[in-house]
Image (cartoon, rainbow, N blue to C red; front, side, top):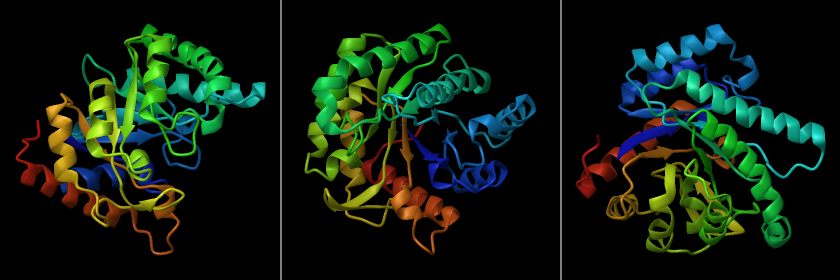
Length: 280
């Protein structure tokens, strides 16, 4: 396994500054965020900028394990849905352009919707996910669906059912354990279910029980990263453990994106060391 950081926590930081800071800390890779209001929003990435970003990753010896293209797949308005699918499929194209080897980065997304809509809308969701996955497959890119508190897919059982319905090796999971930790699910329960089908991960820190929960920067809360890492390894996961800083944290008046990345790295690097897990 390796340590990654998502630029989700750095919406206003220029990519040059972000990658330099993350590389100097010791991160092995970086997830690139391409949604609106970010310095790397998809529509701003012309051919020259894509080439420049690829060279920056190479210059800093950073892998690109994933692209964060989070866009709802349940929009009913045709124009809104077309815009979301443009971003998701554009993320697939970007993954191919920025690929550093034979395996391009995964494209991560959340599904949208609400938990209570699962039974009534799961087939509709599966149809739209299937279209995206087919496009990803045509370009050799995996789509990683993230179960998320408050979304239509909010449990391991639901995302596993989606994988069964779509039935494609190009659909996997972006496993963010924080969304299960805050509803009281155990680490073993979620890791055993999702580690074998995950293309990528996110980790935060968190305290409290939903809906009275608080997402935190890794290292600020009680989450046991050592136990988590050992269980991920035991269940066969060998990809990136990627720190993500939530919008909840970013709303703090004194939020410092570079300091958040530093604390996240120190927390994960220490956990790898304590768990006796070599990165590579």
